[in-house]
Image (tube, rainbow, N blue to C red; front, side, top):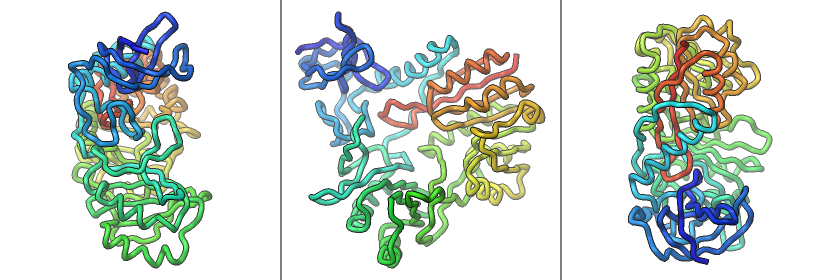
Length: 416
């Protein structure tokens, strides 16, 4: 049937408002007339598959990647390569604005800070052995099907170049699993997640593969492993946070892009202003802790992963920086513990900081600088802080998840 598209949805779908409810059509833009096949129920509406674009929008652009077709979109990594710049930026900002509105929050949303294509330094891919060989790539959107990746316009070139030899190395050694690849200054930091541990032949072949492919460290995590085991380390991978170099453990949390991390770091430093004592919650390996300490602040970092805490302690020697192992989901800092800090910085996982946020709201901390990769949980937690006596200042969106429906953001809260 022929459909006129009215607006964009949070997932990047074109939405047509009909008498029978909303129709959600991936890769369609507002103002376009398309032919689509109606599919399954979705919420109070229905999904629909795009078959043909009859009247294209002037905002439509050619996709940068061959995996992103005009009608079919087999790769689940990107949903928005067909959107022109202004429409795309407005869509990302609207995702943040809608999350705030749902929680009755008002804030000035600053212009979107975007990263460049080919800048993502960390990806996690799936692989599976099939009759025709091994498929290796991202899962198709809302599906368990793996799309064999031939190119990627999001990841840094060093990761894209590594994919063919990594596929060859895994082929015949494991049947299925996932692999995390992080680009570091020394080379790729690769972690394989599979049911079975690496056998002797895999360990024997690892030096040749790593040397030829530019892999600094190869690690493995079986189904019962909570911490990946290094199979081979040619040179310890490092990253720099400001002036501090950190030797990261396998599968460490990092911001997706170096540019985005720098933008958020500068924002955090400005947000904490003249605060002299800072608590950095969900600190990872110190992306914010180390630069804050380098400005002369006294910083205490709290992180639940022991390896990341150890790395930060080593790197932070000589700075006014302490690091403590603390699972903030199970053991959040109490309000009285927070009282010794002038400011709190928090960068929780996508689930947000629900176990911790209530104690911040009850504390006397003057400033809370909140970095989030999920506008929905950020807005939920922001509501708790505002109800607890904080005011929400400007919100800065940062587009680190290029062409995806995800957007990073940062918001500052001041005690009123």
